[in-house]
Structure formats: C-alpha cells, structure tokens
Image (cartoon, rainbow, N blue to C red; front, side, top):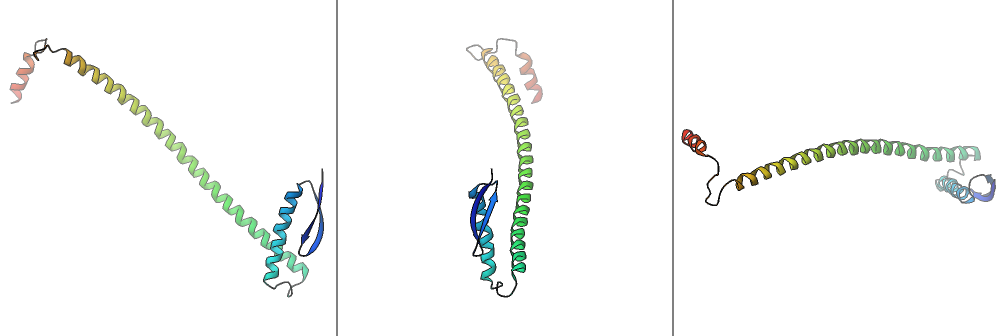
Length: 142
C-alpha cells in the first residue's frame, strides 16, 4: 500500500508517495531539508544555481552515509574481535573449571587419606602398625 504525504523541502511543498510509513518519509524529508538549510546558512544558495545546490545537498548526504557506513564497519570489526575474545575466554574458563574440579577431587582424596591416617593412631599417639622403619629412616637422615 502506497502512503502519500506532503513535505517541505527547501521552502517548497513536495508530494511524496512511498510504501514506507508516513513517519519514515517525514523523518527522511526533515533530514534532507536540514541539509538544504545547512547549505543556505553557508550563503551558497545565492552564488550557485539550483542544479549545483541539489548536487551539493546530495554530496553532503552521501558524505554522511559513508561516514556512518565506515563507523558501522568499524563497529562490526570491534564486535567480531570481542566475539573472538569471548570465545577464547569461554574456552579458558572451561579448561580452568576442569582443572579446578580435578584439584578439588585430589584434595578430597588427600583429605580422606589424611583422616584415615590420623584414625590409624591410637589414643596415646602410637601408630597401630609397626613404625620402626620410620624411626630407622629418620636416624639415617640425621
């Protein structure tokens, strides 16, 4: 469905017809009218003919477009770099999580072994098993 609106561009009323919404057509028209106004503020309107003014307005709009396009491209590159960093950090996090789980399992095992070792002593602090070889090792170390 075509929408029709009248807009003011450079002081002239122009009828527009488009499948875009009237709000969108009005927004675009206001942008173009502002560009025409910027040209008038520079007093170029009196010096150049209408055709050249139209070309200058089109060049200003194209300049804005390419600046925005370049900025968009730079943001895309930044976004891709950030996505790579996120992927790298996620991989690093997974590896560290795995390492932490292994260390926690090892700690649990060592803690259990230590508790079992402590329980192997009787109330007098004597080891229930033959500990003479430990004493011999200590004497040999001194």
